[in-house]
Amino acid sequence: MPFKKKRAAPAAAVQTAPRHPFAGDPFTLPQWYASAASFALYDTLRTAVPIIDAAVGKLVRLTLGFEAHCKDGDADRALQDFIQHVPLGGCGCGVPAFLSAYLDQLLTYGTAIGEIVVQNGQVMGLYNAPLRCIELRRAADGFSAEVLAGDPHKTPVPYPDLLLLSALRPAPGALYGTSLLHGLPFVTSILLKIFTATGENWDRLGNVRFAVTYKPQNDAIDRAWAKERAMQVAKEWSEAMQSGAHAKDFVTVGDVSIRAIGADCPIPDCEVPVRQMLEQILAKTGLPPFLLGLSWSSTERMSAQQADLLTSELEAYRALLTPVLQKILRTFLRLSGSAEEPQIVWNDVTLQDEVELSRARLYDAQAKKLLQSLEKEADT
View: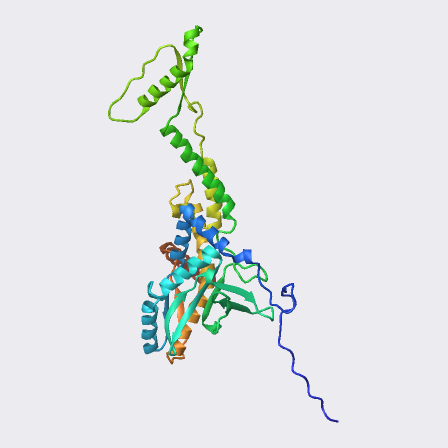
C-alpha cells in the first residue's frame, strides 16, 4: 500500500495577535502612540523641569560601566580597540558613548533604535537612529516586527539584522515601549503652575502697583475740575514712582488716598505642594532624593534601602542593554574572522555595594568558623 506524502506544515503564526481592520494589511499601531507629538512632549518635560532631566542623566551614568574580554589575545586586543574607538557618525566614538545615547533614548521615549554600520565586510561605526525617522509595525505573521524608514514613503529596511531595537516595559502586543516619563505630564503641569504663580507673585512684590484715589470737595468748582485734578495727581504720582538717580517728592492737598494693590494678600506657601509633586517624580524615576540634591529628612537605614532599590532598577536596565552590547561585539568579532564569544562584566554600581558584599562574605566566613568550632566541641 503506497504511503501518502504528508504536506508541509504551514509556517507558524501568532493566532492571538491583533489585526488591522482591513483584511490583508499587517497590524499597525495607532499613530498617536509613537507620534512626533509624544516625543516632543517628553522633550518638553525634560526642558521645563530640570530635575527630570537630571534624573534621566544620573540613571544613564549609574547604569553604564562595563568590561568585555575574549580568551584569545589578538581578538581581545582588537575588541578593546573597537570598544574605545568605533566611530559614532561624527559625534563621538566608543561603544560606551553609543550606549549612553541609546539608554537616554530608551528612558525618555520608551523605545531605542540603533544600527551597526557595515562597509566592505567590516564594522565601520555605530549609529543612534532618531525615532522620528522610523516606524515600527507588525509583520504579516503577527509576531515579528518590521522597521520602516525612508522619505516620503517609508519602506522596510533592507538589512534588519544590523538594527538594534529595545523597548522599555512594552504593553502586551505592543512594539513601542513605555517611557519612564509616562504619567508625569499631569504632575509636571501642576508643578509648572506653582512655579509660574510663584514667579508672578514675586514679580508683583518687586513691582508694586498703587491705587490713587482723589475725592473732590462738595463745592461746585472742585467738582468741575475733578477730572483734570485727578489726571494731574496720577501724572505727578507716576513721575514720583519712576526709578531714577534723583528722588522726587509727591505733595498734594485735598482728600487723596494711596493704597498698594494686592498688598494685603500674602504669598501662599508652596513648599508642601511642590514636595508632593517632586515625590511623584522621584517615585517614577526610582532615584533617592539625596542623589538629586533634595535634603529631605531620612534615616541612614532608609537611605540604605533606597540604595538597594536603585541597584535593582539599574540591574533591570542593564538586562535590556546586555543583548544589544552582545550583538554589537559579536558582529564585530564575526566580521573580523574570530569565533570568540565576548564575556561582558558590568561594573559595580557604587563602592557601597562592594563594601556590603565584602561585609556579607565576612559574616558568612565567621558563621562557618563558629559552626565548625561548635561541631568540634560536640565531637569531643
